[in-house]
Length: 156
Image 1 (cartoon, rainbow, N blue to C red):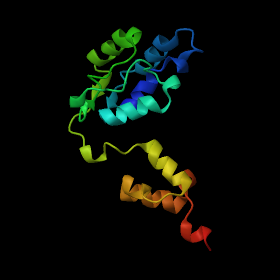
Image 2 (cartoon, helix red, strand yellow):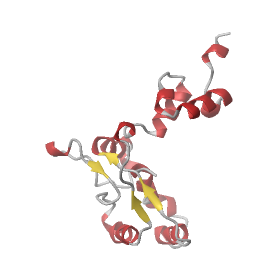
Image 3 (cartoon, rainbow, N blue to C red):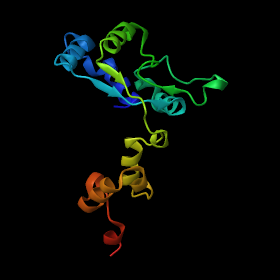
């Protein structure tokens, strides 16, 4: 999963209905030696994610690096900052191998986000098909998945 999805896992609003809150949820998620492999994210994409809906952000006090040397910094599972009161829980999961940072990733695809691809498909915009593998684009078009409308069929 990507950093943005990992941040959502640490968003406590999802666990308000559990008696044990986020601790109960983490206990359930990782009880059978589950590992989450975490894909890194460029700092500008991280900042964009954090600023999209600041009131809903799981890291309300974090994000938005203003340092001029932070232009090409990568946020990964090791340097990700979560809310202060969750940092020991996060460190525990990282140190015990439940959160695994991926290395050797392809930088050319780091600015592609599934939510952006989905929005383009649903709005009928072109260009989304080069953001996914050719086989995936073919299946989406063939089956009309995610709200895809074939332009040649809708204009007929």
